[in-house]
Image (cartoon, rainbow, N blue to C red):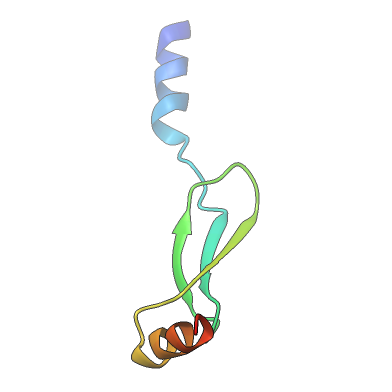
Length: 59
């Protein structure tokens, strides 16, 4: 009986996507990540205008 309960818990418990990846230029949500707590990561999305801003910032 105990193993059946553990199997049910294991199947029904899914990791939460509490992490969010946001574009640093347009603030759009790029993706989510399964994390243990709320986390925000900044990257650059695939929009051409954002890529250009990223390229000009490194000059």
